[in-house]
Image (tube, rainbow, N blue to C red; front, side, top):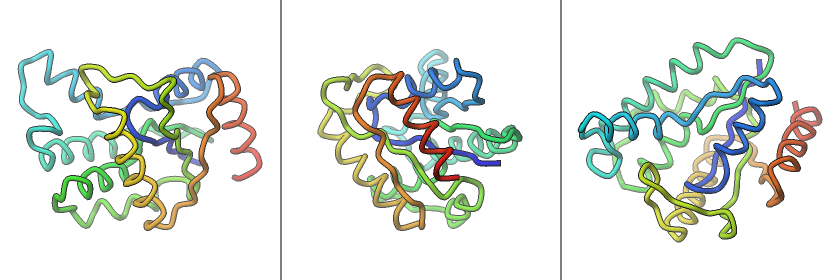
Length: 175
């Protein structure tokens, strides 16, 4: 059962692409980090990546493991994967639990990357990063996935419908 990761820096159109894939009937799993941040903001919590990246990452890992357990169809899409946690921890110089590196066995070996794209970039309360920070994070993501042995394919900078078509065609030809 192929579990396809769609990754990229903040504000690069991942969530919009996943929503469009979901509308076509594909099982899609939302970005765990945004969910946690929104929950913490709503409840006055303090589990944020900008406050305690290690504790935040542990919670992301637990929830991403739950997503993996829930993905049992022929194909499913993930708005980020466990290797994203590794990339963020590397970016901020934090320790990385060894168990995180076992993630490769749970996902498709091909990862789709939404590149930084200034024309669609936007930030909000859950993703306050600047465009420059998005570019830097994108670099760390691609570097991490490549180092872990994943193949990286960059999603073209086209409209959502064309991106969906490209993703589906790529998956048919790659998997």
